[in-house]
Length: 371
Ligand SMILES: *Cc1c(COP(=O)(O)O)cnc(C)c1O
Picture 1: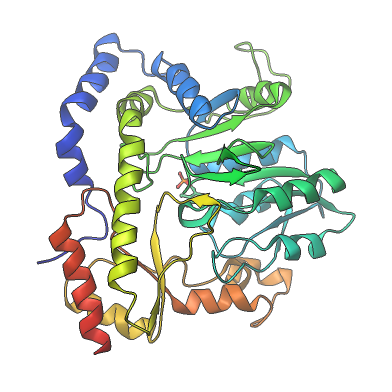
Picture 2: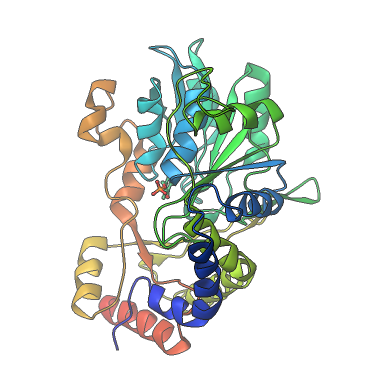
């Protein structure tokens, strides 16, 4: 039995009728640009995030780029982020005119280390971009305290964490609720995936929402009147319709992912060569990825490949070691936790439609490798 890393066709089979009907409504109306599904989805995602405003845009990358552009960064302005993330987190800092400053991660959650953030602040620091990696929230309280004390903007990269939450002072706080602005991605493989590219920004700052709405539409609130230079980064109406039909399922899908994660963690507990993911007790993880540390990781990868078991390494090269950022001067060993994670991590299939037999096959194959 082969087990794919992700099976979008299995999900399609469960929601086909609802999604196709929603898409056909858009097709029948022929309103493809900023049709009613876009503001409807903006309201839904803002509500889910306990935020006031949602601003649909063309991708998760743009959901980070537009807020970074709204900071009007000057050459030499610094934005602190994690090196252990998808490239877009730091690529957008560069493309908005800033300098990414990478700090190390916490070895348990793989998330940015707030103490390292604090040490990296300089007079040129303008913002912090934490990433809720694999679907588990960062320790936001620490970062909010630091950001407030230093007058920095917090831009949450929640591309992998839609619907994730964290208990703070006895209350559940959502990914997307606590930063100045948050970016989501609707890339098809994300927990809430479109049938193409898409993204959304959420914020509770009215002025930021106005500004971001302008930036996604060539810098003007009124057509053909431009207060500043923006770009075209609208969310496609067809994608918004697909997402609106999928949103009601998101909670159940995340619960399924948690169930698979709990199963894996229990089943792998007696294999000393692997370390299952650590969930901070304050967090409700949505398991965008289920990521182990594994001894002889590269050999394990080869074994899983041979056995037809889906797997992936997120991420094999930390961003401070990417050739495009060589000019920033980081060396091998600069950020040891991120570098070690890049050598040791491997993610397993965790999509909601995974069957018990498939899970067992994944576990047995890993057990077989280490025996
Ligand atoms: C997917 C992802 C993005 C970018 O989203 P796109 O929709 O692919 O542009 C940004 N940051 C992280 C952490 C991601 O996983």
